[in-house]
Length: 95
Image (cartoon, rainbow, N blue to C red; front, top):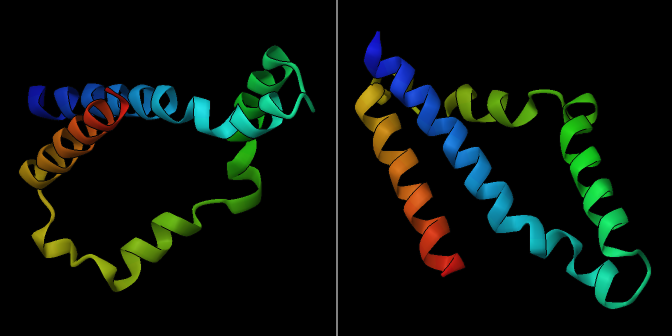
């Protein structure tokens, strides 16, 4: 149970890191061209990232769960490794 809680916290940390990592990329063009102010651009990006599930639903998860990844090979250790790799990649490419 503690391991699952740790994985959930790690997943939330990755989500935060990924948003922090990609925030500049998602607003750079509209800010640099002065289409939107930085505050408005960040607000728009945050809003549309939050409501994206209303448009795309769970299609990505369905695609991955429909045969791309064999569920028999997925366990907590694989999830931990994937999250650690993704967090490390975000930090390395941001730095």
